[in-house]
Image 1 (cartoon, rainbow, N blue to C red):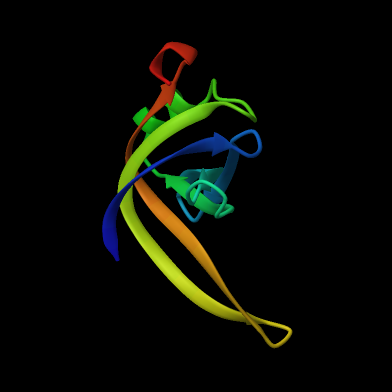
Image 2 (image 1 turned 135 degrees about the vertical axis):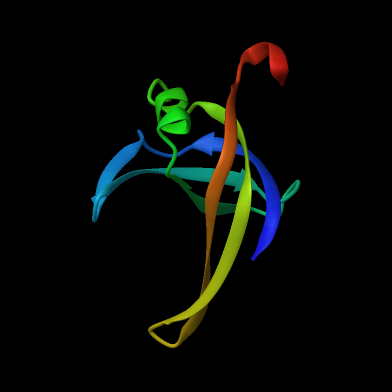
Amino acid sequence: MMRACVVGWLGRDPDVKRVQDATVMELAVRIALGRGKGYQWVRLHLWSKYLQSRAADLRKGDRLIAWGVMTLRAYDNNGQPQATADMRCDDLSPLTDGAQ
């Protein structure tokens, strides 16, 4: 686990799930790895109702910045090594055209 900040584009509308007695909102964010180096997807998990209310108006294609604790996990996909990145989000903010 590590603390991280990511800037990226929302890949789909926010998805709300029920986990035991809690509600979690999941966002799929595409981040650029650098000029010509491709992209990586990061799943943001928002547990706080405050963050969920801030993210409720976000839509696919919106740009945002998020802070939190990042977890990286390696797995095997039909013999091919893969990796996934998840972030338990502490704060987020939409980025408007003026903030680019």
